[in-house]
Image (cartoon, rainbow, N blue to C red; front, side, top):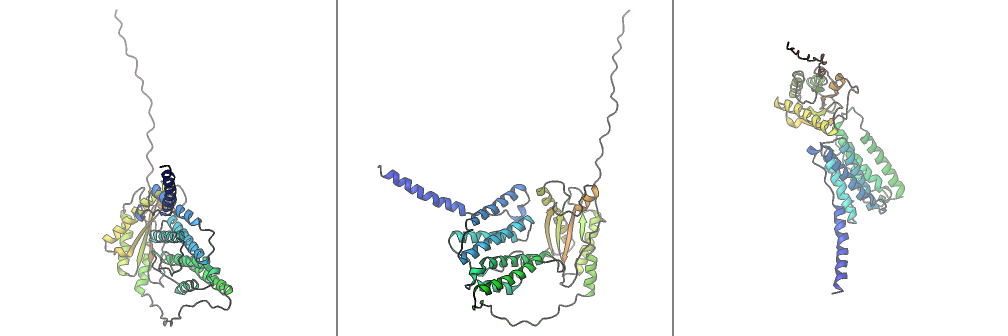
Length: 381
């Protein structure tokens, strides 16, 4: 009987670290996009991002090329998830990036590596620059990986950022991530050449180039319609409201008319608020305003598949003052158009439907106080 007690203690001590390890490797999930509008939900998601970062920090000292690449790729995905979460991205890229980072951390914790080519099907980021993707895949199969492991991982996620950038920026806008991908690709080639002398980097098979065809010119009717859209870039709202006013309805009716004549045009509707109120309240209010504009357009014939909505709450102000007009300018939904590649879709803000909040009536000044006179007492004679 005396020997059974130590054996029981040993068994319990052996089981406790295993259970603890399983708890540490469990990854919290992010709140679904539609519910990321409250401060507690945002705080939970921040804790999940930070918790995954702490798990990843345990591998800061890895040195083997495969594990070094896997760790750097997990860090790049986690950084992307945090950046896009802070921007309130609703394309699905945040969840995809967080899931990939979580899977890579789990791979490291199981003492494996991830060197297979990444899937190009990434939410919110169409694949671009196939030449740089092929370069990254080929280097992972060569001895040069020991010199470029972290650079290759960062290049792959920069390509994802550049693809996402192409979906939210107009052609004439700056594309810093696309430029960064080109620079990183040149650096990776140089480092690989210097790392393995006289050993060529495995090249992807050369595909016969397709004949280049000039893009079809945009018809004059389409250009004229796009000029009209350039003056229909926003509508405004009343204080704490998402109701479409009569003046805003006139603007949106023009949008319906033009989009009906130009089926190539799509629109992104971004809701905004003035700076008063909490972050969570204003994100939800901006989303309701964008939804109201979308519902108005679809009810009048615009295909819902051509419309995307989002909210930036009070984070993107167009007027920095604190008077009634500045507040009215900030309470808006901005309409961002995208269309034929060689057509300019820059828009101008209109102010014809501004809704200036009425000043609150002042309380009436108190009048003179009436005092009751003392009752007259009749004296008996």
